[in-house]
Amino acid sequence: MSKIEARLAELGLELPNVVPPVAAYLPAVISNGFVYTAGQLPMVSGALPAAGKVGDGHGLVPAADAQEYARTCALNGLAAIKSVIGSLDRITQVVKVTGFVASDPSFTGQPTVVNGASDVLVDIFGDIGRHARSAVGVAVLPLDAPVEIEFVVAFA
Image (cartoon, rainbow, N blue to C red; front, side, top):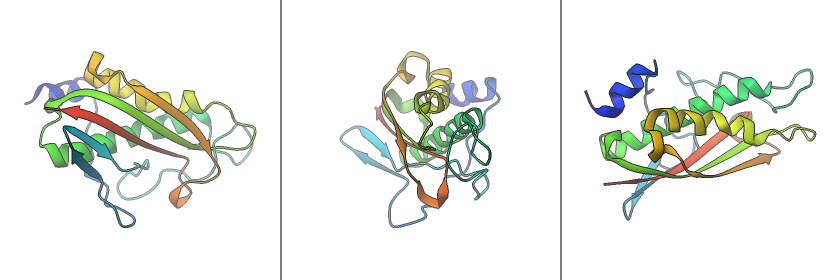
């Protein structure tokens, strides 16, 4: 068992299967020692666990739920990365995370939502999981997903 696989097991986490693309793109691409993931939705067994905008009102996806969905997006991204480099132990640095949050106009907690992805990457990788980041509120995401995460990692 690899070091990262052991860490995932210790955390009670399991990498999902790579989420098939919903359009004309690849889940992850290698270029010059980096892996770039496509935007990862919080798909679980081929379906979104929730849809809609994130916010505090009736009919909106609660921020705490969206934070969990961001975590799922990160795990989906790690599965995509593993599919192109073979082992997550090859990652030398999580470089950049970009999080998109489908936001109700009054919602300003995008950084807290994207922490779901950031925190799980640090939990898994330790210091090499610390990264630069953007957390962006948007009007709508593909399939009406509440959150989408993409990231870049360096590997050897």
